Image (cartoon, rainbow, N blue to C red; front, top):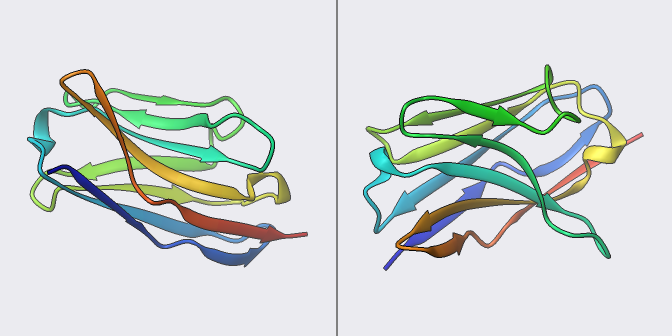
Length: 115
């Protein structure tokens, strides 16, 4: 059974930092691409960053230069370091992976940035 468990969300002032973690189980973590998405009420879930098994990385334009995705294959964990946070980064952040054509999601962690 695939499980993704996010942690690290919270309330932070604009300009501050947070680090999100996503612990994965039930998958061959080292070969899976991992992604972070976010969603605000009334909007579609959007890709924030993704990291592939070869280490290649993609970022949404809105977070380039501020967010850093990384992975620790020994701990089956993917991270999202978020710096210089803005009010518009407020959202529920979800961890994602795909296995055998199936999308798996964590429960989400709330990030609230006060202006």
